[in-house]
Length: 570
Image (cartoon, rainbow, N blue to C red; front, side):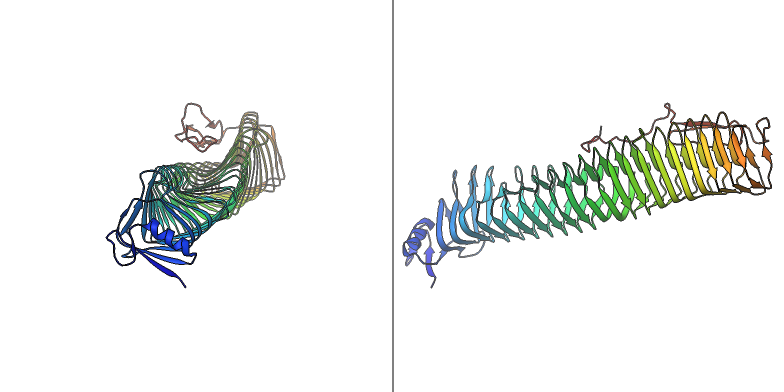
């Protein structure tokens, strides 16, 4: 049977004048006890042992227990607190040293200290409660937090460390100076929560921790919405991050699984994977990123499957010895480039749909810079669907480019291989090589180019086989300067322009055409020559001979914030 004790400063029959005296009486009897506390403010430090229940007799907020310094509640055993307000400073306001502690409809105000401390091997439950101006610390024990509010913590609102296992459900965390929740070398589950206004990452996992997040909303964060570091693992499902600096980040060998999330209006990046982190991202939407929607750098190697990138600056950027696999993604309405592979990095793009971006794919870097693109469509890119330079190597298979200026272009010492691909209705050229670039094409089709089907200039090398060029306004193929190579088993069809403008260095074998073929000494008639400078790719003017191309012109600036390895802008 539970023994009942009444606490009332005003006195009364069998009433105790303070909570401490009631606790002593209950401990002396050694039985489960219910302590009912009348309204008032109690300047006490409570040491609670055994099977005890402390209740505010007239409901939550009617009883305030506090001390200017030192702990307010020290629990061991099986302790339940209902409706009390606990106020303390500088140290643990409430602590569980052994057994289990349950706090319900309780408010803890910790001015600069730890609001609630769950020690190793304890179990602490916090339900329908408020924690203000302090942090809740789970060290090595088990915890359950339900429908609580954490506000204005001076560092982390909730910390889960040293092997603890904690679930936080349906709660609000706001205004934390550092993190909303940090899990380190421990396990935390965060479900159905709202986090806002944190100074750094709203949720963060480090030191091989496991963090599971589902159905959360994260807003107005000065750092990452969710961050995994130091070989941490976990999952994020159906969560929205809005207005963070970075949506979801992974670094230091972390490997999260992220599914069905929305990362909107992030100031820098939506997904940020770096320093040997991995990660799998499925069916996520990255909307309106200020700099880069998906940024992979410094050895990062994620897989991104499905989802959509819409609005913002750059779509996917893989740089500084990073790797990535990207499948089934829609990329649309960007003010800059959809896909970038730079600086000794490698990426595979399969089944992508790129629409209404300034450029499609850019690749630039040393010979270790590679990209493979398959079963992908580029539509309405303002400049080039694909433009590569440096010593990069890119392979295209079953790729479609529709409208824009250039289909596929290669410059510098780069190498571009194109197979079973189609370019339609571009205003400049279907494919081209300049500088010392190498263009190798098999089964390439160019339809309705406003100028050229394929072209070569500088000292470029072109190997075009089993390809067709139809209805190109000026020429099916044009070779200028020192460009060399071969055109084998190709067809040029149409009613205007010429079939080939040669320079004496490109061999033509089994060409099928009813149009005129111009040799090196001949010049076709055409409109006056024009010169157009474009930073990321060539633009072609009317004539098919002596075309002037400026690709990578240093006098033309590209307005884009560069993201450093740590995800910050420079």
